[in-house]
Image (cartoon, rainbow, N blue to C red; front, top):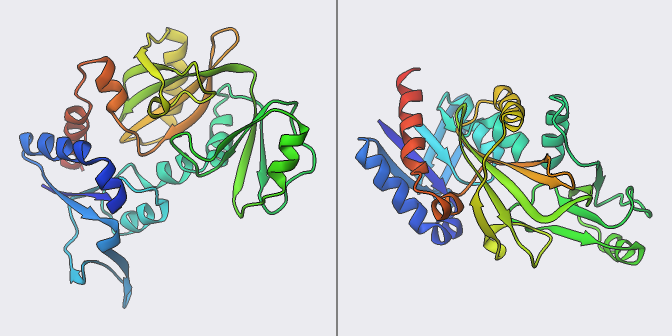
Length: 285
């Protein structure tokens, strides 16, 4: 069984320990993983046939692909080639676009903050919600491209610098600096982690937050399972905000989720479980 692990070169440098861990766990389970840099990979269609090249050399299709780039269209290409991809193309397309994610999960009646959708080329002169509001680029991740706008003056400053991208605008009537990340493999809830950053409105661990295991209630598990049932997840993190009454409010789905935070608070070997899931999924096809 041969698989590809795809990274951009910069991302590979930043995540070398994760890559080494991934390759080590795969080897233990007799799975051959090849690290492929996105910049070296060319994909396309030639005379109605799907083709893939690495550094100009034609490649046979692998048994599966774990794509750690944020490039949903690439996932669609692999799907067209009938290569099992983790996560799949639909998950990548929805999870990496915050507007699409909220539209989809609203169909499931999942609680979420009041959320408006705007575009950088047509920014409204008045904020669609009372201040303070949080503005997020729909493709932003890791706490980047997120702004806390506290008043009308800050809003006017924001709209003076339009960007050719889409944004969501959300209410801040939650416990700022706190969230819960739920790790999912396939249809299984692996664990939940409470993240807290007392010095920032963002709870991201990389931004200086702390973390602890979070015990999910039965009602929370039932809600999460509604989300799981809608998708065909490989490995994802589902992030929830916490409202003033301590109820979980959906925030986003992390398609390319890390495992550092879970390793910090538990002895769960997330990649061992993930590779076992991938292996079993391929064998069952």
